[in-house]
Amino acid sequence: MEGDMKSLIAGLLFFITVMQGCSTLSEGRGMPVSSGGTYYERRCSSPAPLEPLDADAQQLSSERMASLRTQFSLAAFETAAALGVVPFLDRLFALEAQVGPRGEGPALEYVRERRHITDRITLGILDVSSVAVEAGCEQGRATLLAEHLQKSLDKRQSIYTVLGLVGSGVFTVVSGAIGVGATSIGVLNTANIATVIGGASELIFGSAALMDTTASEELHHERNLLRDIWTGENSAFVPAVWSFLNTRLADEPAQRTLRETLIMRWQEEGRLGPRGSDTERHRIDLFFGKGGRYTIDELRARAAMLDLLETDISLMHQGMNRLIRELLRRDKV
Image (cartoon, rainbow, N blue to C red; front, side, top):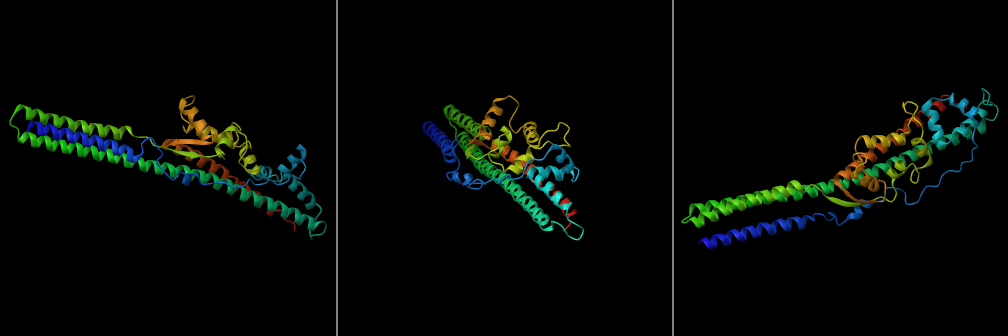
């Protein structure tokens, strides 16, 4: 009987070992968790780059720029400068001075110039929305993949927990049954062995659940808005938005640009890891490069960075709103 009990225990131990291996393989630990990885590679930007408008307006002198600055609020003028409409505003004001109270003078030219400026502001609104949507789309890719990885990780940990409980319970029952029918010291030793194995199986699977905290997947981004912000070299932003992001903030004590402020906030919030660490160097290469294998934490960090970028880009709408309102107040025709 003692030999049969030992055989039974050995069989149960072998069964739990096989179950542990199967649980690891079935979840693809250390391997991509999604066979349809292209789902996360959907294009967020236009397939063809947008052609910039012809810069047919001449540069204004510093004196003329200073004069025009007094005609608008700071936010409206900075927005006009980002949109590239300041020279057209100068031309509009010159025509405005020639238009009489009853519409006499170059009224038609005035209306045409005003419509041209309005069209450019409208295009600016669409450009800002387009870039904000792209940033939001990239954020969605990272967030969706992070959620998918987290579900896979949670499922794997649940399997370890269940196996640990089942293994412990089975060996406890076997140990108790052996103890009840024990007739010799050898059989009692077998019961003790079963108890030890049951505790060991619970420890093994419990430890596996605690240590198995990582999951990773490939995410690629050939066109990378974050890279342009980090390097200061524009390859993905439309000129108006890029100019806005690189405008010195008058209400910021250090006179930083929005782009510089974004980088500072990323670092202060720990999105890139501790300063000078291997984690920071790895994330800089990963986040601002063409992509690679991301962990859940890295995907969430990238999504948070894109969320901040989307918010700052959308602020440009406020300046365009103010610019249009200030133009409407001085309409003469």
